[in-house]
Length: 222
Length: 157
Image (cartoon, rainbow over all chains, first blue to last red; front, top):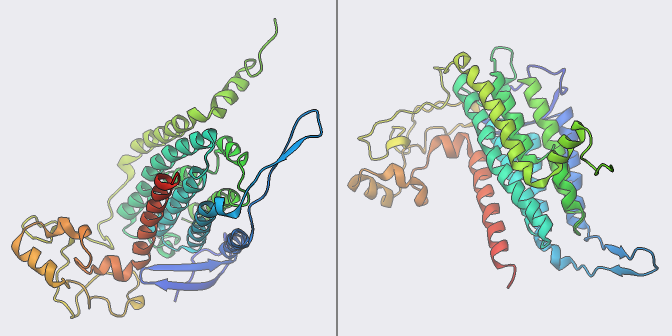
């Protein structure tokens, strides 16, 4: 029943999962992204936090930081939630559903960052929070413009040649994902990676990169 | 005279500005405003599509105001859906009100505005049947936000 109109961009679909009007799907492309997200979610589940060592410059002295898994319970929980949201965004077949999962990735990213005690990191988390809040406007604005101008939200209909999605809606969607996934803002991400807490911090990078790959596919197909 | 790092060429000045963490929100806002201005110019080319999948009518006199979809409970009601094959029981649960909700709707004109404040207000076809995954995702976002707020509030205990 469900056939992707264009198979040159992401390959033929492999599996279709119907939730009423929201019809999720896997293509070759999104299945690869989904597998990556699943792999990193499993890594977050099974791994223990890294133990950092500080070396004193110019001598032999070093300090091992005392890090217990209990300290990172909340980060682990947020990283798991972030992985789940990424999984949802990878397989979503509906524009509004995709924006919802994107904003969930954004808020879990803030949760991962905000759980640190370092003043510098918390400052970065505050800036992120503001960016993610601004980003909800273009993100859901793009879904609203698409619904108003085309009358539908299903990607199966939008990907067809019959429906033209306005350019401004596409730009808004990319802009919203940029703000929520923080993909281009590596400037401030460096501040987070100084703090202890790998591999949970990695989930921020994985989720934003995967989201960006997915939104590029959606925008090109529309 | 010795030049300080990052004060040299114009490109290093730009690089210095965008690497400041405090400028992050402003930078994003400028980008957003630029796109919005661009969008405002193309506003005339955006045409409202008349054949909407999820139509909405406003009747201010109705107590269920923006959520009134008509129909009788536990009966077939004509509800639009993108893929009716995926929702075979489409229309069966539209218009059902729990007894409490029925009471509020009969005695006040503001039932539609309290819909989010109590469970089982209206089992809305559009929300819970054809677009159920959206409802799940929305509440998940809400719970994650609550979890973060609770953690930040109580982590010193």
